[in-house]
Length: 295
Image (cartoon, rainbow, N blue to C red):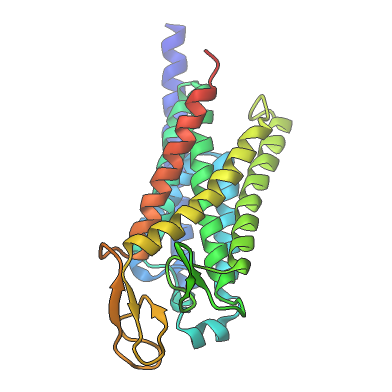
């Protein structure tokens, strides 16, 4: 009888936390729309992603806030240069596809982790949270690579065919600045996650700190960005401007000339590749976590 009462109290608290998280997520999504971090059509998806992240607790909330804050700042960095290159679409705010592409997978894992926490399965909770943060690290690494790499003075080169130069912002195109930025972006999330673990142990929210998880998060975050470049180069359509002889992902080049399709097996958008890589990263994180669970 006592055990049943504990379970009922746990469920009651979970419902209260869920209600508060939902209201807060809707409010924050509305604020994000008002300040043009997201577009109007992204309001509902952002609220859903935010709700699930909030349910994951501080271990998912703090790294996710770090991702949102840094990506918003970097999106606006070098605005004039990005508008000149035609890569400033995100300055007007992330649309619903972009929100789901980078947030749905890690948010789902964070929400599942909250259920594991409420039933007191801490092994499963840690497994799911680690995978969620790996997904956030990938999103941050990809965003930093895109938003800073486009400002490079050197012309991007196609990752799978480095002798081919492409326009700035083309999927699969990389620069040294972009790759260094990707490493920094992933490391920021990994260090934030590690610091959050230490903070929560201090306040006795968690009992242990596991530094190797931050290393795994860092590695998977960066490898996810590399995988994104490879898949973007292979799967997304590529065009060549006959006038400028430059590869682009636009049907009409910046010079106004209609381009000719030369690469790309599927008509996938950048958001499709983002979502695919996000799923792959968290699956790898889950697999690694399962392999390291003590038998």
